[in-house]
Amino acid sequence: MKDDYVATQQDLLVARVRTSGIVTEKYVIDGAQFEMYDVGGQRNERKKWIHCFDDVTAIIFVAALSEYDQSLFEDSQTNRMVEAIDLFAEICNNRYFTNSSMILFLNKRDLYLEKIKNVHIGDQPGFSDFETPFGHEDYYNMGIKYFTSKFKNVNENPERQIYHHATCATDSQNVEVVFNSCKEIILRGSMKDTFG
Image 1 (tube, one colour):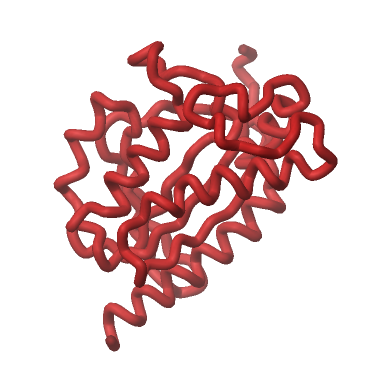
Image 2: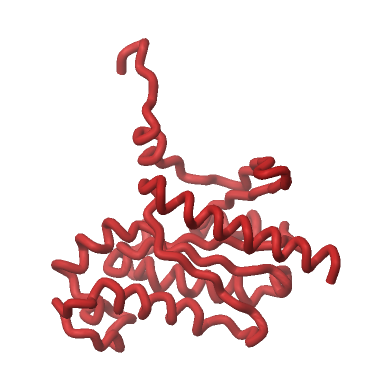
């Protein structure tokens, strides 16, 4: 890399740093203060943070749509999407998060779009109940609907609404729309907590 290199916005969007432990960021957006905690999602990181949170306004859970046919880094026998759904169930139904809004990001929709051209969801262990025929004209949307329902169905609290978005973190317009939606959900939850 050259000494005078300056990263572009696109460079920053595609950069990836694995989270270890708990990383705290504070933001002021439109006059409202937000405090965000980024936690490691890998198995060996979870025990470090699950007990640290009580009375959080919202949980943003990110799962990669494109990983429905991949195994975990730590355990080659476990499907990444199955693991994500199991972890979502654990968090969603955890007593620490009973009153927290749940926001689900099904991320990497761009990679998912490419993958579904070659890899049938229903052929994957754990997803044999996916009934949309491979190559169907609405396969993309039917797959997203299927995975969204897999996540929503593990929620044991009938009072809780699961907000969900199919996202692409490298698409700045998509990120802006989703971010504004999340901001409203979080502010609404904060107002509810404050004023009942």
